[in-house]
Length: 131
Image 1 (cartoon, helix red, strand yellow):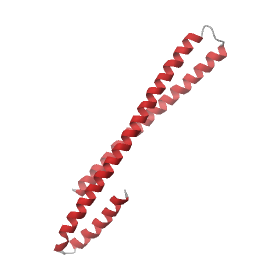
Image 2 (image 1 turned 90 degrees about the horizontal axis):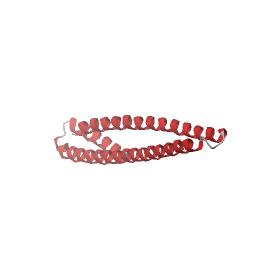
Image 3 (image 1 turned 180 degrees about the horizontal axis):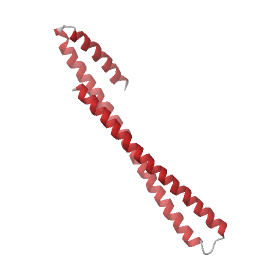
Image 4 (image 1 turned 30 degrees about the horizontal axis):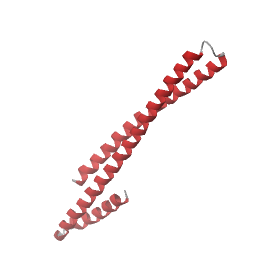
């Protein structure tokens, strides 16, 4: 990210000098433009890898939570006739908390999707400016 910012500042400086009429600055602008493009490509790759990791973690957590809910539902079904009411109620409360967590995870997934779309749009704008 720092490389991208430094390249952007340097590109602005070179662009200002080139705009002042110095024709010998054009190769420098092309080199800087290439550096900015390379930094943007690296930044985009890092961002995509980070989002892939977050999505992967969210999916594993969701799958584990689903397995926990299924196990709790099975235990409740088997325990209800034999266990005392307090034990069954504790199991139901645990299942309720797990379902609430599951709903929060769906919200996290939606926020991740929105953030990823916003980042992609931002990177596309940066690519369009760098091209």
